[in-house]
Length: 267
Ligand SMILES: [Zn+2]
Image (cartoon, rainbow, N blue to C red; front, side, top):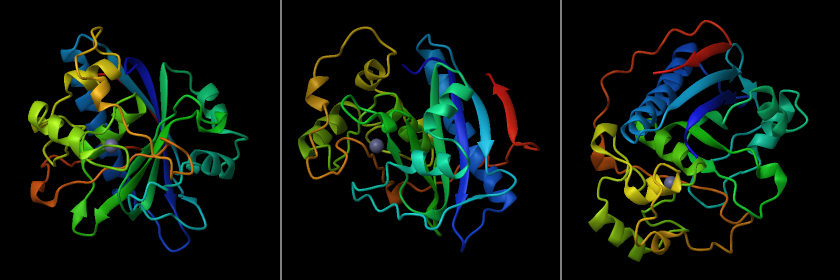
């Protein structure tokens, strides 16, 4: 349930050929903060209190991995990222991070110095315990000309709390997308935009993330379809952004960050 204290543990990752600059890191942190603040506002509108606390790894020096996988919406995105990265920084298991930062929810945000389509790895019943820690891969940009977007990050965060896509993917049918377009044209699970304020959280998604007690009709119709080809069923999520929606947010000034730890933030 997306409520109470959510711990965002943020990892800055690069490979031997790349490096994050401080400015870029701050921009990515601002992107995450803006997404969280939008979710806080949405929660408040629904009578839910939500706040985020942050811890950073790789802030002073990147966490370097041998190679960063392409984010190409294949359905075969690496869902073992949490395990690999936490091992590199000296933990036995991602579960240790959960123990270290107690919260109602914890999300691991892997910020990758590469361009690609970001994706979330949400835990589903029946998956191995090592996938229990939920997180997402946030790529630097979609491409050199197409920055990442606040709505994209918020969309991925919602996946971690039970939201499902409405646009056609390897887990969503065209029939589902068509009905969603008619009923929830501005749902953040249907489309993204560089202006997050034109988007909302639709009633079915609100129910799925625990913000409403009454299950809306047609909820089950929008259940994701099985994806038997995937090595880890129902494990990866992807998001695209329509290029014709590009209109950048003006406020991109990053908060000043001067340590590897950030105090909890409450709005
Ligand atoms: Zn999605």
